[in-house]
Length: 430
Image 1 (cartoon, rainbow, N blue to C red):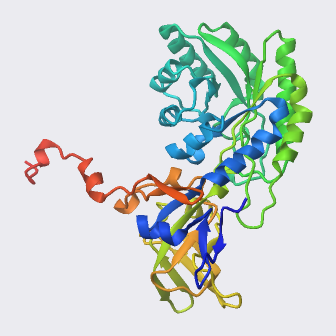
Image 2: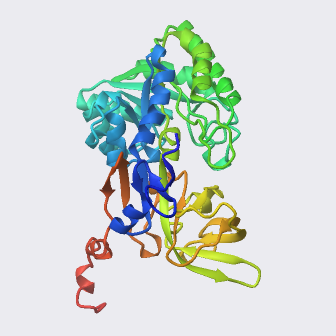
Image 3: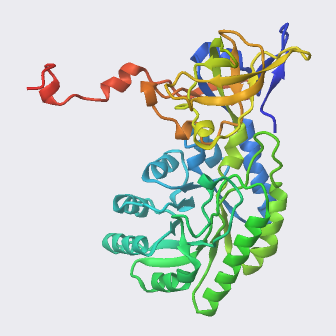
């Protein structure tokens, strides 16, 4: 659904609104830059998964790495979503947002012993185990705490996801998962280890997939493995299919959720396992935007630069991946307004601090607002305080209301959190 669109609403000039709230109204209240999310869009995107998989009884575990802000997770928890977490911090966020422990899946290649113990204490539904040493660590912790840990083995099917190299996770060259050649042996070991209950197989081949074929290849590998494990006498009750379905940033045509569900129904459903899904970007990516204000328009010898107050520390994807995000003015330009190539850049002291390079842009001036679209996933969750820039606020819109769900942090608060050692308190180094 389109959660952000131009509306006149009695104004002389159409302006962008998120649901029923004008972006200008939010900017006046919270300042810029800021992230803005639509509760209606989040709900609609979750419902697309829930409806498509309703007949399979699939558990939809929202992947917090896409956006772990509490109000976003709480919105999804209220709809019945579980959570896929990859760190102790995400685990605590999921619990704080109201996700029941038994609906939490803990993925990730580097779980610390402390994180494992915390997850066991929270009664999580499943660990997705990515190595034999991790399996042993979970066994040790479970025995020490007198708890049985439910584990699924994440296997690496060596399937090319045909996506960006930095977000491909299912090839044998990546750090993720257990090689297929060792999967049966590892599953048998899980069955022998104390404190461990092997319950299934997990797979996740990457993010922003735009074709179904890589999914089909990976799922076929998993289905064959499940049948082999059952022939070996092992119970396999669950299959975690991960996430990865792409979204439209520019002109992509990602698979429909119903087509993806039909694939799962054909390859995986006949096995009779509980199906777990881990969508993240597909739920929140196109439910959010980063709003920024133009500081200056700088004309160089051969280029025009639109300098805005958001930077790569606020939205890293364009600098990190060369990712494309739509950028539109908050006040709708005239239909026949001239477009001219420009670089949209931030204030960070890095040449790579650019949101768009030689992008056809409408004429804008100092003080104008721009919306950087499709920024609900891997925007705020990857943000940093580089160049001593505090994290920007996040806003959630619900109908005609909005709320600040993460306030802007004042620099004084940041500095107050950095105590000086006693030998520096008087300003000397003696």
